[in-house]
Each structure stands twice: as structure tokens, then as C-alpha cells.
Length: 239
Length: 239
DNA sequence: TAGTGGTCTAGACCACCAC
DNA sequence: TGGTGGTCTAGACCACTAG
Image (cartoon, rainbow over all chains, first blue to last red; front, side, top):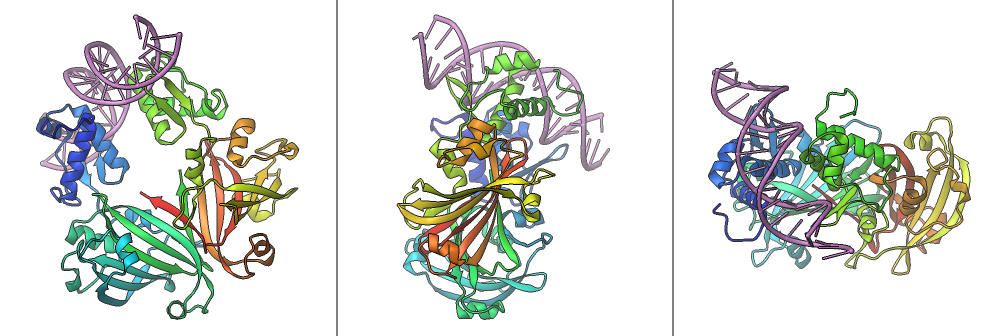
């Protein structure tokens, strides 16, 4: 197959070729891929080898397969994929989709730490979006998101931001977040944030720093979130 | 194969049969399993079907395969598997194995909430082990672990507790933790705990509640941990 | 050299879906 | 009915390990 001379198992070469196409937007979110046999013909390998690569992408939530129908590119609009990365839960409550209110959007230069976290080189201009997420109409999370111009060209012209930014990223900027890395700390709430959340200054709060990773491995977004855990917990399962 | 009349794919039946044997201690941690062909013969399926089940168990960190050698039952003594579940990291530091000092061991009855979290029925007697974990010789984490008698018969007679309790569970009680579920909150440090950690009372701290899941799906341990995040973060990756 | 797991292929058959 | 993915098999060949 014409996949270069790297010494890699065929299925890995197929996997890499598919990742490359997906990150270039060759197949759009929600679109169907060719069948296993069609891909096998095109890439010059057997159907079983293609299958192994496809199934790997399914376990990574990048593709979706349905018996009798076909193989599709996963979309970030589905509720299931929202809850994959949204880990805050109301204590003893249902899984509810948070509503979101934008507090401010501003353009600025990333500081050194931010630029490092975002893996930025020279172009350090970012958009900073500050939002309040409410669960059951209770303000719960104060969130501040950094979007580099280098990753989202023209994002300063966006007029309306959807509840799930990842949907916007996928639809308009060909960015598919496949992994997030969270660092959690406990902090005393700063006055400004306490006010937004109707909480007391210096109350203990959970602070999450998140790097979001694109399908091509780049960090494409970095965010900070504050959450009082009187009513919410950050809930995660490790296997 | 003689695996009952459940309508399940063969590889799933093989997987279940292997899980059953592993949870019964048929193969001990570190031991080698029979080869693919031997298992296939014994179970009356083809080698490829056995392989699919084995590879699933490898992705779940339950088995370990080495080309040219064989298939082995994973052990919890390895450093790698320690860090799988230990998520606290020193800010900007290396991954260091924490040292542990036992503060107290006592036998008591679980309260209603604890019994519910542990999925206990009538036998609600538990051992409560309280420990301080230090990283780089700095007291970092105050941890309180509940071990039900129902799960660990005779554990009240243990004289020495290893740094990693999971090692003890696996070697003496045939318990292999394959998953943990953490709920994180931010709290004000209670006086007793602040003292143990050389911190100020009411300083904000991260509090982790953890349920540990055995290979057979049961919750086998429930623990609470307090950690000041001046120097440490809870770090996790979601995919 | 023999035995193990790792890769790759080819083909049969089934279950599901759409027309 | 034809096309898709899902399962299962059989066999060839390679790479690594140990004696």
C-alpha cells in the first residue's frame, strides 16, 4: 500500500492513514466511510486488516459502526459525547445538561504559562471566553476558556457560542477533541468568582485546569473552571 | 463449548469463562496461562476466538502478553499499576511513589451510608485503616480506608500493611481491583486532619471518595482521602 | 530448535438494514 | 434482495524467547 516505508504493522499504517484523513476533514462528522471492502481495495490490504484499524477507532470514540448500515464519523453533538468530558454531577441527582451563559469574550495575548500549556509558538493571541454554567438553573461552574487564534482562525468573528463549544470546533474549525487532561485543585474562591456563583468569598471550591487534545494530538484549548462542591462533585472512573 | 446456553458470541463466552476462573483464583497473579492453542482446544473454539478474548483482557490490564513467552495474570505490585490508580502528582515534580505511615487500625460497624457505598448486606463489620501518605517525605494525603469483613475474612489479624493495599488484597484475599470510581470535592480541612498534615485548620483541601471495584464487579473497598493542593494536584486524562 | 504470541489473509456464515 | 458490519474459522508466515 502507498503509505510510506515506515516499519509498522499494516493495521497501524491503515489506522494512521485514517486518522490523517479524519484530521484533514476528508470525512466530515456524521458522514459515512466507505465499506471495509472498499477501503481494503483502495489501500491494498485485506478486509480483516481494515477492520482491525476501524475497530480501534471505534474504541477511541472517533468512529461509530452500525451493523447493516455502515461506519460513521462520531459527532460531538450527541448527549453521550457531552457527558464523556463533562464530569460534574449533582449530588444524588440525575445527569442534567448544564445551561450556559456567556459573561465576556475578549481578545488578548496569552501569558507565558498559558502559551506553554497551549503549546503555542509565536502567535500567542487568544480569545478568552468566560461563562457560567448552571445545573438545574443553579449557577454551578465559573469557566474561562482560552482559544488560540493559531488553532481557530477567525474565531473572533463568532457571534453566538453554542452550549457545547466542541460542537462549534468540530463543525467550523475541523477540530475534534478526543481527549482531555484535567488537573484538579482545591482553592479559596476569589471574590469576583464567588459573586458570580452566589457564594461566599474564600469558600473552598474545586478548580479544574483542562487541556483539550485534538485528534491530531495538538492541545487546542485550555480552560480553568471553578466549582463549589456543596452541591456538585467531580466524578470519574479509572480503569 | 460447555459454557451454558446463553446466547452470546463465542469470544464473549470465552471472556466470561476466563474472568470467572481469574476471579476464583484458578490462575494466580503472575502465573502463566495456557497457550492460545491449548485454551482453544480445551474450550472447543478456534485459536482466533481465544485470542480476541485474551486481547480484551489485556486492554483491561487484567492480563499481560509477551511475544515469545506467554500470557500472564497482571500483578498489582508493579509500579506501573500503582500509578494507574494513584492520581496525585507533585506540581512540576516527578512521579514519586508515596511512602505510607499507618495512624490507626480499628474494627467497627459501617454506618448506613458506608454500607450502601460498599454494597453490604447484613455483615457490616469493617476494618478502618487510617494512614498518612508522604511524597518526598512531605505529609501529603490523609487517607481512611474501609475494608469489609465480608470481603476480607480474617483481615483483622493482619500484622503489617504494605504500602500498596491492593497487593495485599490480591495476594491474600484473591481480590483484584480493576476499576476505581472517584468523587472529588473541595472542603475546609477539619482540625484533626490539618494537624496530621501540618496544615492550617480550614485550609481548602481536596477530598476524594473512592469505591474500588473487584474483577467480579463487586465494590470491595471504600476510602476517603484529604489532600492539600498547595503542592499537589489530582491529575487525570479522559478519553 | 521448538514454542509462544503478533500479523495478515481468505472465506464462510450470520444479523441487520434499506429498498 | 443486496450491501453492510459481526462472528468464527483455518492457515501461513514472522518475531521473540528459551534451552
